[in-house]
Image (cartoon, rainbow, N blue to C red; front, top):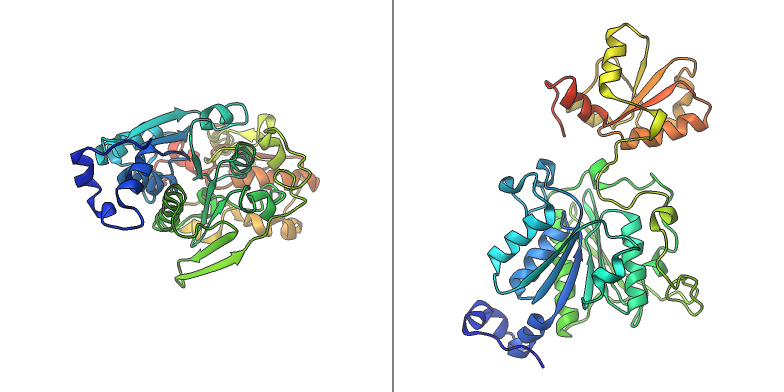
Amino acid sequence: MLPALSHEEIMRYSRHLLIPEVGLDGQRKLKAASILVVGTGGLGSPVALYLAAAGVGRIGLVDFDVVDRSNLQRQVIHGVSTLGVLKVESARARMLDLNPDIQVEVYNEPFTSANAREIAASYDLIIDGTDNFPTRYLTNDLCVLTGKPNVYGSIFRFDGQVSVFDAQRGPCYRCLFPEPPPPGLVPSCAEGGVLGVLPGTIGTLQATEALKVILGIGEPLIGKLLLYNALDMSFEFVKLRKNPNCKVCGEKPEVVELIDYDAFCGVPGRDHEDGSAGGEWDIQVSQLAQRLQEGNSITLLDVREPHELQISQLSGAQLVPLGQLASRLSELDSAKEMVVFCKSGTRSARALELLVSAGFRKVKNLKGGINAWASEVDPSLPIY
């Protein structure tokens, strides 16, 4: 039996009640619904805000991060007043301020194969607001195995994608992408950037699709992938077909339980930069500063993009963008000691792997990148 609406709720949702496709019964469906939002960043922010405003009765938030100043350009659910606060707590406070009649559950933990089933068990639908492949494949497989719809979204620079993967009525994410791309091939938003309003557009579309599924109205993006480009303001649609050989939703599935998705994708399942190559391959910024001060001859290799030099740079560093490194190895002297750096240490860690595989041995990754240098050695440089 659907829950009743109070007089205050009827006033709050009056514009919904006036729509024949929603009406009083539809609003009661929303109040009875439960939706899990994985990620409270760029996509999760507008998703959570609009689900709360629409009156979805119970909303779960999964994240394992705190609010950082660099988030505020696009993660509009957070603000200056919540810098350093857990993202799930910051988001919950804003959602309840917007609509105190809803219930918001928070899970301040990584979303992994160990806890995903338990967290998602009581929710009707899952919205993928993540920025990494392990969690994306985990969310997909979880939804297939539990029969839940998966509202997918992704963003990068000016481009976004949206779809609804429901293996009971159409293809799943693995039907479209059976295998993840090689580690490092697709940069994250933290590495490549994103137009601040783009996640607002894509996240709002995800929220729209979720409401349509709950209400049972319109035509959800099942079997269709929406492609959006902000620069030319274009919306294109690609028809998707269910793959009978899909390893998770096909006729003879191989994946019947959740797996180790970090190992499957070859990268850790988290939405922030690690900044480390691990163990002996790293050098701390304080160590590098001391060695340079002592007069050691060290080649500084900057693997960022040329436009990033306008933000900050280290004197005397040689610029070879990561994408060009493989074809420009001949420009580097493998006999010299070398320290590779980027913004945060993530791209340079991948560059180090390439250099080591090419025979370079006297090479280190600057842990934390030039941002760590700016924070600990040279505060005159900005952090970005």
